Length: 470
Image (cartoon, rainbow, N blue to C red):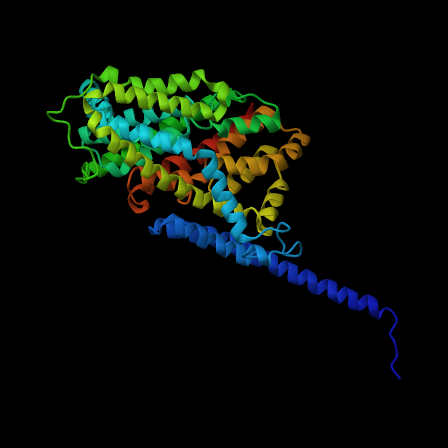
């Protein structure tokens, strides 16, 4: 006769529950391994020179498989996958890919064409020659950084700034005989550091916190001013030192077949007249702010028209410039979309949700927790704006409830978003190094990483210290 042991059902339930808990912990651990491993794989493949259109989906696939995400829509389950209900790898990856393409393709297109027309018209070369003649070749690096900084603080998208200033920077570096592998570092430093996240900047990285914190674009301006000055001086000194060291080793400008021929003997438009296209872009953009991001279309279109008019004697070269710009824009935005797709998959994993929850429980100042949350998510998604838009809806009410000052939180989040976002897989970094400048990560990322990862991280630490004191 079988004896039924009292409480046995409870014991069996407990064991089953325990096994499910163990399995869930195992799945969560596998998700963590996949998320970290997928990010490491993406960075490694990118640095090794693998096309980002291949590296992005492959790394995202690793993240999806380890998170238990169904690969195709027919396999998607409504629940029980440990990820968002109904999500699948193919649909989610392409949703992130195509959404960025739809939002930004026209801006990429006009920005690339503008840069090519500036080169074909001779305007870029004219400005470069004038700067080097008046200031000396030692200011070629500074001129590149300042040109990028002015456009960025004027509100032109950092992607478009890279296209717009590249032709000018090539001419400047040629005149000064500086190694062209530092052009990506100069463009990135002027665009995504002390200008992008500073008080008053019209870039979205400074505007996103406003809707969640009830602040203005000038929130925390006192600390922002100090941090921006620190980043600008430290970053430029570091970049200049790297360039000088390379020149001392015998490096110089390396011409390419795709470059415009040196300008000796060619009629160039007057230098002040050649500045008008850049002035037109900035002026039209600032006067059409009511159009939102579409103001870029009006601004870039105006810049193209003015650049073509300035270089009317080179009109025969303009059709080729339009074609080259269109091709470059398509490649550039596709590369960026590949990274955005990876971020879309990363957001669906249990590890991503757990990481976000963990940073909210960090002890100490709410500003430290917010900084860690935003910069971590920005690193995982390869996007400063992505780090903010994902984290802020979740952390803003939490930290405001803990008594965090909204202005201090705004500035901390903005600066934090511009630190670890610039790892090698970042869409802007990939586009600027490989598509705009035609360089490799092995040659160019050292300067980019120093000025856009290390320097902003130092700025973030200083900001946290200053906010804790005042």
